[in-house]
Image (cartoon, rainbow, N blue to C red; front, top):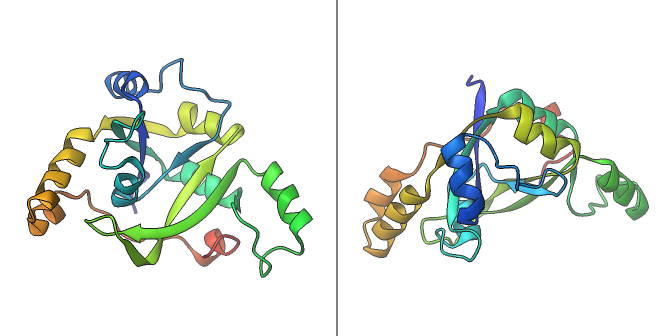
Length: 185
């Protein structure tokens, strides 16, 4: 099993380009605000519009430690109330306020960015989790904006086989049932 996990984030060039160049988030990157990481490249493309949306023109592949990723999952709360998982709405709200991470499950996307029937994890980091993400878990940052543009061009040209061949490899996360039991969609 790999010791790292790759997640994706999109930033304005003023943040994303220095981060990729220096291999760390710049001082202007706010460690005190929530940041969302996405293990799915295509979901990131959906969110940032193939790196064309304002302030999301630079897409980073962020390699983090598996240990850090799993810490965030263990300490996460669902981003929405679920009557089957929470005793009541107030208990969920309390847990949400106290959790350094939150999870939401959204439909995975195909090459045309249409929703698929299975879900993809989005992981929101706040407080301690944000600081640890930037200062402890970070292994590398790579600007994958050119890759996003190449995949998008292949999709626009109707060459889905070429687009698929360019996608970064992804597979279901090999988590034990106990790691995701409190978060399962």
